[in-house]
Image (tube, rainbow, N blue to C red; front, side, top):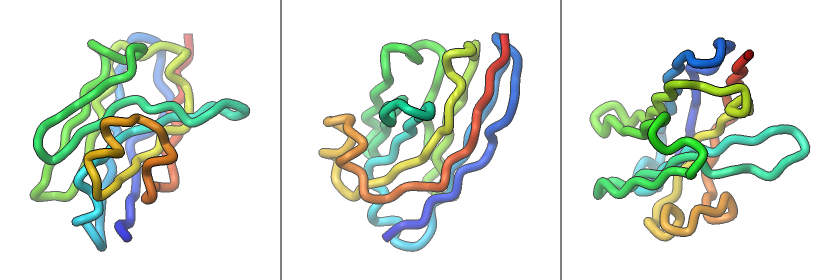
Length: 125
C-alpha cells in the first residue's frame, strides 16, 4: 500500500490559482497511475486529472485548459496546477494512486485503492 498526503488547498478568489501537492510514500510501486479527484458534499467523487508514469494524461472536460497534472518522480510527488479557478471548482480534492494503468484509462474512483485524506479548495466569486 502507498500512503498519500495532499497539501496546497486553500481559499482563493475566482480567477486565481492554486497548486496542490500529493506526496507518495511506502509502496510507491502502487502509484503507476495517479490522479486527482474532487468531491462536493452530497455528490459523487469526480475525476479531475489522471497521469501514468509513461506520460499519459487525461482531464475532465470541465478543467481542460485550466488545470495541469504533473509528477516529480524523484520526489514521489504529484501536482495539480489550477489556474483560472471558478466557484464551481470548490470541493475537497483527493489524490489517488493505483498500480495498474487500467485505473487511469477508466476514470472511475472505484478503480483506485489508495487515497489521501483530501485538501479543501474554496473559490469565492
